[in-house]
Length: 572
Image (tube, rainbow, N blue to C red):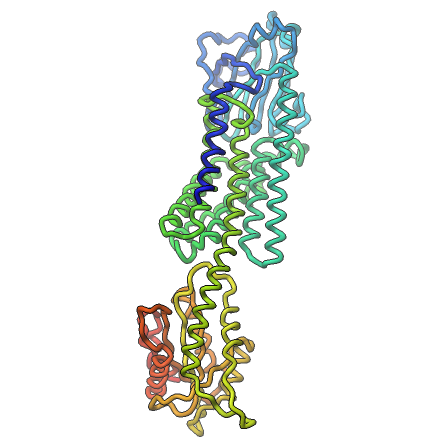
């Protein structure tokens, strides 16, 4: 686990160290931006040109959720005019519904005007870019820039200025990194899907959809989906962030709960996770049908999703679950990388290519660690199966000491097929996530009401019809007083005591299949497979069966770990 912590620390600290030593390395220039909100005196570009921006407040980049329009004003620095080159103005926030961009010269004439945003087709942008980028010649078109923005979700206005050559150089590197990111996510999603189809394990399907939803959510958030996947469908783009985040949170929760076995170890968090899954699917469905952006509700969903994922990880680590640290390292890396990106957007961290892509780096790191966690499951299961085989071999030795050789119809002597039986009972649950702690022992007898003697043919028919020939019978010669002849014993390995109830109910249903000619009786007990309990649970189940026959009831047991007390005394 140490190497995971070292890798996490390196992936988070390295970009910050590089940024602190190199400062702003993306080729952009600092500018003084002023801000004013829509008002009666500020409704058009002519009002904005005449507005007293000297007394306006500085822009704070992030304005949260706001239904009002916002105006921004700045002047291109004089140093750019002296160099005589074109300037690219980039608004590094692609999810703005309405964005109007104006360039005004010294005569207060509008020399450049563009109206674009996510509510408009992608080709309304002058430069084909996932962000909003505008090419300006300050010497010919003027230095004053006005921006008017409205959006239904959170509004941010991180404005950056680049020399034209520096901007396109940056874009080339960005395309390479984005291609690597989406390629990695697609490969991981397809690989997991293929594993799921081969192994028939739902966790891999959850993981595959989670990875794919992550990539689609990032593409919607960063504008790549609108640029390359649905450029002519602004209505769908309007709903894409809510839609893909809803699937991202729903399948992420399903994957986390399956990976960490929350249904067994954390039942309360499991129920909360079900609420998050249902809420996410419902919100995504509504968003897809109405093609509306429900960013406000998605924010609450995001908060619930993040808190639940962290709670699942912390609880698993505290419980000592072997996958807990994998989950915590992967999820923490994602949260920290998002935090670094947010600090960069807010101006608290300088900008370079690693900081700029920190959230994608964290996302890939998380996906890789989660993939390693799934690989660790099968390494753990291999060791666990070995331990269980040793335990069952010991149980076999104990059973063989108690098995009496019985005559078959041919007159030969044989031992019941114990090896086949052990394989069959292991197949009842091929996935083993935790230690095998108990074995359910059920002693069964079917008595013919006319002869009052055990009828093994009727019992065998029930076993074949109800268990589909998966269970092998164990005939025992018993010296227990009150049990005449042979008793059939069934053994079931349990992951927890609650799994016994399904087995008991299936045995009870035999009575229905037998008809009125026979009486079914059985007794049951649970073995703990530890040295602490020096009890012969097979003999104990015999005694319970004897009590059931004596009381003329279907079943009997005094095991207080099960909730079957209501069955005692029930007529057969």
